[in-house]
Amino acid sequence: MHTTQPLATPAPTKVAVFGLGYVGMSMAVLLARHHQVVAVDLMPERVAQVNAKVSPIEDPDITQALQTQDLNLVATTDGAQAVQGAEFVIIATPTDYDVDTNRFNTRSVEAVIQLTMQHAPDAVMVIKSTIPVGFVKDARQRLGTQNLIFSPEFLREGRALHDNLHPSRIVVGEQSARAERFAAMLQ
Image (cartoon, rainbow, N blue to C red):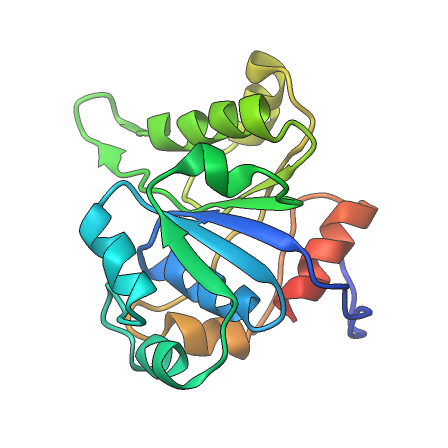
């Protein structure tokens, strides 16, 4: 999708964000300003930090936002509960490069896709994790869902929220109404 004009501001919606690293945290805080966000992480200590309005990562803008802004953000370890009623599920889980297989480890991304398909089959899943070329097409076919799109991140660690608030570009990997809606949420 290519546009130079601001898109219409979408109505508030529920969003689940998986992964509380710098990509997931910055997305959760950005979206919680205007939408209901449930953030999910496997580490209970990260979840507790977010619920206590403490950033689990080093990012001064995220820290300030958590402490001073009225964010509609809660965190949980219960992914099934988080996706219920969500219109969008953002997947920002680790996909570390595996030197033994010479590939990115996409198991955590696939686990979130399968969980979402089971508990919120109509939710649009947006992958923000690093994935190999062709992953979305392959996953759509292999896992049997068309509700999967890719939106790469262009963020710096320690400045992720700033970069999300002042993006040089917003890229969503398909031309559709749902992609336009998601892009508008990021503006």
